[in-house]
Amino acid sequence: MLDAARAEFERYGIRRTNMDDIARRAGISRSTLYRRFPNKDALVETLVLRDTAAFFAELDRVAADRDPRSAVVECFTRGVRLAQEMPLVARILESEPELILGLTNRTDGAPTVQAAAQVAVTLRRSGVTMSDEDLSAVAEILVRIAVSLMLNPHGQLDISDQEAVRQYAERYLVRLVW
Image (cartoon, rainbow, N blue to C red):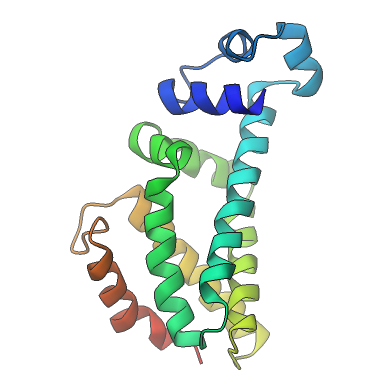
């Protein structure tokens, strides 16, 4: 079911896909799909949570055995690239970026808070010595910058250029951690 949903969402977008399309691709009845997922939002949320877990697991792997400053550089660089490489995320960013903003607004910013908490854990593991309060603030800033760049990629920084992203992180973002 999830693979079928992912394929439909990646091909047609979330808004243009309905539960009938997903059930047909999965080779199951609508009622079977609705027993597992009461609506399309629940299905999207399950996929987003799965992708988010994989995303942060990759960032944890990248940060392993790095000092805080190089963890920021390499995780930021990899995170920007990963968001472009994940087909569902890329599709949403390309054709339905307002869904990301809508999700954040509808949930009182919970995705941003959760992502920042995960970034803070990764940075703490890499050896940051700053207070928990400062670390939480910095992690949230890093998440907000990354999301802003993903939602509006046209600007001074060419996010398709991995070396430019790395230099950006080295010049501006490492200053935030200690």
